[in-house]
Amino acid sequence: MKRLQKFRQLYRDTIFSRLFGLAMAAVILSHVATFILLFVFLGDHRPPPRPNAHLLHHSPHDFLHSPYLGFTLSMLLQLFLLALAAWLGSRSLARPMQKLAAAASTLGDHHEPTPIPETGPEEARQSAIVFNQMQKRLHLQMEERARFLAAVSHDLRTPLTRMKLRTEQLDQQEGAEKLLQDIEEMRLMLDATLDYLRGSEEQMQLLDMTSLIAAIVDNMQDEGKAVSMLGQARPILAMSNELRRCISNLLENAVFYGKSAQISLADSDTELQITVTDEGPGIPEKDLEKVFAPFFRLAASRSKNTGGVGLGLSIAREVARRHQGSLILRNNPAVPGLIAELRLPRT
Image 1 (tube, rainbow, N blue to C red):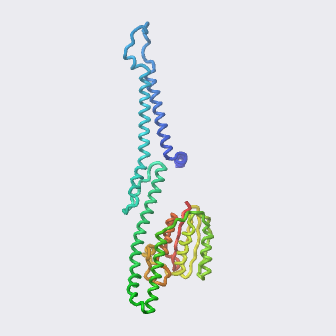
Image 2 (cartoon, rainbow, N blue to C red):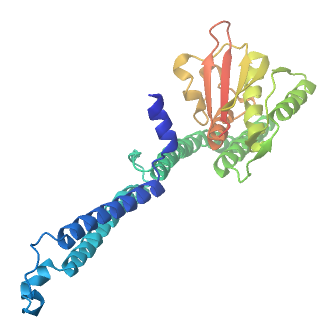
Image 3 (cartoon, rainbow, N blue to C red):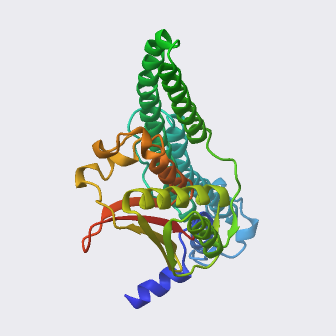
């Protein structure tokens, strides 16, 4: 096993190694064939010539035993072997690219994406792996956008209907105030929707996560919110504004539902894990994924006084995906409360 691992470290299945191997095999085979042909045709296996044999007329069949035929056959054989090696090599290298091109032509369709085989040389395998990951993320984003737009069209009907009914009560002070509240609710919803759909053009940069989270926690503590921080982390490539928004949304939710929040950092060579813990009532197990849907609210929080429009967790997960990371929610098994785990890869 150790010898096999050592051999794999020395030999990498790349396009270069395959081309080099095919070329060397063709050259070696052609030289071996040439040597055999020259040995057969130039080797003197005939009996000694008779006296005055040079004065006799040469037979036209002597060409079959001359060295010219050997050289001709050897050159033709070399050409054939090199052409065969080039054909096999081109076919072997072109097939993964052809599959990748065929899959790319259907990229963006609404059907379930079919992963392409992750076979071939190392470069082809890496391309297939990256392509499969890309089409999976694209499919998830398209599904998310479709659900998002459906939720927007549904949720905007309610305040619009109320506005239509209350226009008949504009002569009353109470009706005018409620109409203004509905307009403000629609404004907040539209602003959050546009921010969610617009995405971000921010570039990745080396970010000091410890300082970023410490600044967020300090600001929330200045506002009188019970927020604490544990742990430290090395800098990581990330989008500063996007992560600030993601972490702020998680902490705001934790403080609102759990009255207090604790954020902890666990760093490693492969990823950075950010955990936000609260002491609230938690979320029913069947709704742990549903709460990431745009505008989804639990029955107990369907109120105008919740301070948002139901996009906080949707935006937080979208930010995690833009960083090739993940965001999951789970109930605390030890004490009542919710745990949000944000994982950001370092590669």
